[in-house]
Length: 626
Ligand code: DMJ
Image (cartoon, rainbow, N blue to C red; front, top):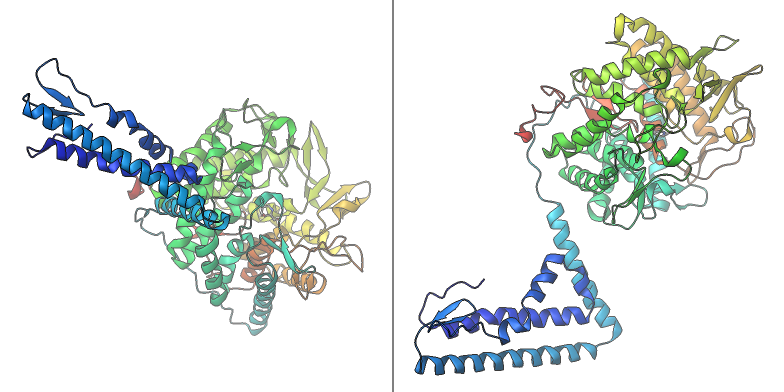
């Protein structure tokens, strides 16, 4: 609708009002000619075409009531007025014709340009649109009071021997980082032997600098501040999530969102928070399933999600959709937007309503039907961090989220009853439940559970704290045995307790060590809760073995057979080696006042997030929510 004119010269005003649309049409025509039109938001595309030619060329004149309505302008009088009006229409038509001719001339001029020039113009146009979208994405977040950030710069041990060990671990971190910096910068991971970048399908097909994001908080607590700044600069300038890339929702959440949030809390640098929130927005379409259980993978650009081809009956994986809670609660806390919190609470509510065979959670859940897939249960791969996050949801809420604690207690009771056994040689192990049968095999991944039991001991049901601390110690012992019974003193990927075999890998494809952290993670938790020196001793054995057998001049590599005295390398420096393995080792040789467990909860990728002292679990205590 055109506004009524304020002065008695409607014709002139009308012409002025038409001038802008004519210029717009000229712009639209040129834009259309060179393809950039497709980068415009839908609303502006439509706007341009709504101002069509007939809008101007066919005036809305109604002569029936002795007055004229010209595009909203009411013109009174006849004779002289009508003549003036016709003249004005004529002038307007001429002007429009002239504008069109000019536009055509401009278009012809453009077509004379070289292909390169035209492409450069399209690129400029695209960049402008991308910049505008970016500006929209990075709108300021509401100020939120920061939680208690205690013990960020402490931990220096007084004992010179411990200090020396800690320095050695810092040196290993520098070796891993410097080589990645030199040979793999910006790639997701490093191939330390080929000395080039590496990636896997969990990160999609673009260079998202996974090692940089995963390593940031370790660099920070080790005091490697120049390296931290390099990483920050790369993230600021290069980390872009508007890419046509299909990523794992779980991996991106634990490594990227967890890593960015931890870097934000430790350093206070806003860029990390902004990037975490931008990325989280890109993961949200994964939740658009009939049940709200997210897909395993999502395309960051299109938002299209799907599940792994290998998962039972098109299912989502328990350890993946069940390992979002910590990060998503923090996202809601920092943004004041409950959307993240609601997504993870919806998953929890759905799981609470479901029947659980023997009280156990199967690893597979179909996001279309809401039904379990195969009845396999594991505290290792496919199940592990779901249980971890139930406990940590409670801890992170300052122990207010008692619903999570209850779910954890119930789950652990069922696990103890059906999955935990003692071997003939007296080693406590956690097996895997497969369709009513216990497989007497334990994965390296499962070894994290020793630390989890110790962490959950305080606050356990029926005051069984001593029992759970003991269970943690037994798992730590078993996992140490799995290391000690190898040639390299590094643990295999999976080991058996069957047919006379105890804590030893049997199949060739289970004999590898890929720089995983879980055993060291458990040593560290056990150390924090008991201060038994054997945990530092075991941690040091592992440090020396890694340095001896996994270190190469281009970084650190996994090894293919821990029982071979001349192992071959897998040529991958995993990002979790910097995020977790080296961080847990460093913490093991630091004082307890570095990241104290009363104030910090580590996500499953070892990224520390502060305890949120909120009034209750619905986050209604968060000022940003009001
Ligand atoms: C890490 O990415 C996380 O710890 C995850 O929960 C499982 N495993 C790897 C490291 O082994």
